[in-house]
Image (tube, rainbow, N blue to C red):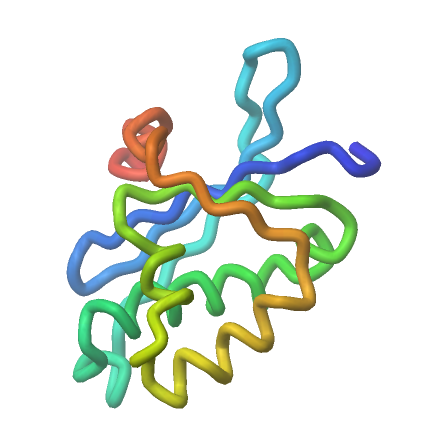
Length: 122
């Protein structure tokens, strides 16, 4: 799997984050790892924009060895790239963006629905 581009599908099903890291080989998707988290405490009060970035941070921290070893395409139906590039973002998002900048991440908002059966049935 050295330097293969992995795909991280990120989905928000309130109050839960679900994500799946996938390796695609010859048009066959193989799950590598699942991450799920329920919002608790202060996280439950984050605005939607902060929640999206926070959920990505949760997945990155949990799957750090994969993110260090591979480029990762982040696929979601939410405008994640625009949130990270927004000049009026909060200090928390700026801090998380700095943490994310250590990895080779590519954001793709167009294919978010492909692995939904895995995310919803899991």
